[in-house]
Length: 212
Ligand SMILES: NC(=O)c1ccc[n+]([C@@H]2O[C@H](COP(=O)([O-])OP(=O)(O)OC[C@H]3O[C@@H](n4cnc5c(N)ncnc54)[C@H](OP(=O)(O)O)[C@@H]3O)[C@@H](O)[C@H]2O)c1
Image (tube, protein in one colour):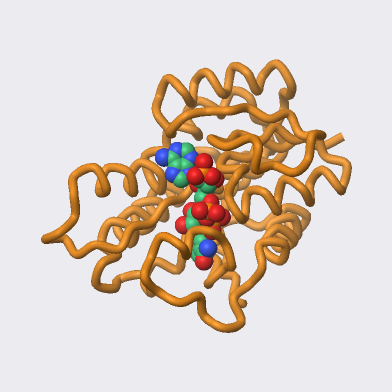
């Protein structure tokens, strides 16, 4: 039996992944701010607030009541804002850095004791070099920071597998937050979920770019 812990399970990619894992017979702990968005009742759902130290610690303690030796750990939390630096509010800036970068570090820190010795840790990043566009400074900076974090973590956790997954456009609610049109041919969250599982099966580490 395989165990997974999914952060951001109420999001487009998080939901698809949770459903796929459950369909494949995994035991899944799904952490989300909005549990009602999860269609399935088979997952162990943990409702949490924003990714802040106390909430993360509490969520991990609760998760430990359902699973130990997590085989697949996925950080699918992320947030985006489109605002030029001159217009960006401190709150927006903090929100984007927290969701995309600080949250990844905190959830990793608190989750490590719960992971199997050969666990696979996956982070949903972005093709950061393509994100360096006007209005996306905080998002692009956070995703670049995430890449550095993942690289260092991979060197520290050599017995575990650490992977930065960089999807191209995916049809999820994230796009409703920016004044840009979803590109034609964008991937569905279900396809991304299947690629995540494939990466687990193939024991992939480092960086995985997913083109749609
Ligand atoms: N969609 C794309 O085209 C695309 C492309 C490349 C990379 N990505 C990355 O893929 C990841 C998943 O995004 P998605 O497309 O599935 O978007 P999404 O549907 O908006 O999901 C994002 C998830 O993050 C959660 N979240 C955001 N801020 C949070 C916070 N401060 N604390 C706790 N949870 C928070 C959301 O929770 P709530 O549901 O509670 O709001 C939601 O579950 C993100 O890192 C995104 O940058 C997406």
